[in-house]
Image 1 (cartoon, rainbow over the protein chains, first blue to last red):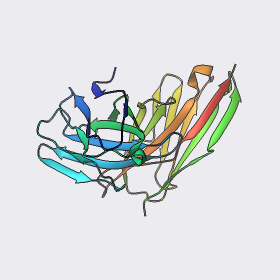
Image 2 (image 1 turned 90 degrees about the vertical axis):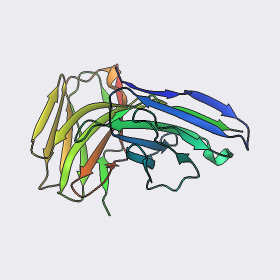
Image 3 (image 1 turned 90 degrees about the horizontal axis):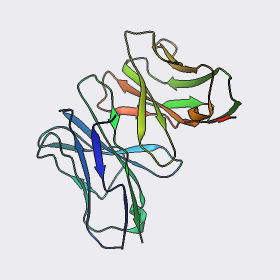
Length: 111
Length: 112
């Protein structure tokens, strides 16, 4: 059973709202990642972190921001949601040289 | 540019068949390679991780091989079952990279 948790699993929200997608892992992994995936499409890396107070943007330009204040917690925030942000957001973590473990995902719909 | 491709894009087989999914990568300087399974609307489940020094890994009915020199990995599924229906993705971590590079996936349907 995966030890990485994402909340909410599903969110429907209106345009202009601020949202935060939560991601927590109990495995003590240093490396954490956020991916964006549209239905039936490829995964795109949007943010990653190699440890506390370390965050980097990924390959896909994103209007979201992340923070890493605690090892186990890596939230993603959209300051002003738009319909183009509708997608599935997947959080993952790994130890050095280890298996990349994913959460169940957060499916966001912006009306 | 680092690229990972997967062939075929989709595959439909009758239950009980043995099948092979292919993953190709453009650079042999890989650190490790991981196979995942994804069910519709869900996250990814790790199946097998192969380090660059390994030739293959096995878990139950699954066997993954790695040939760095030819830039290929294969996932072999024995005695397929309808419950194996899902999208299978491979991801490569390069020696000089910072993150995994994902393939587009193979969508597998196993018919009862």
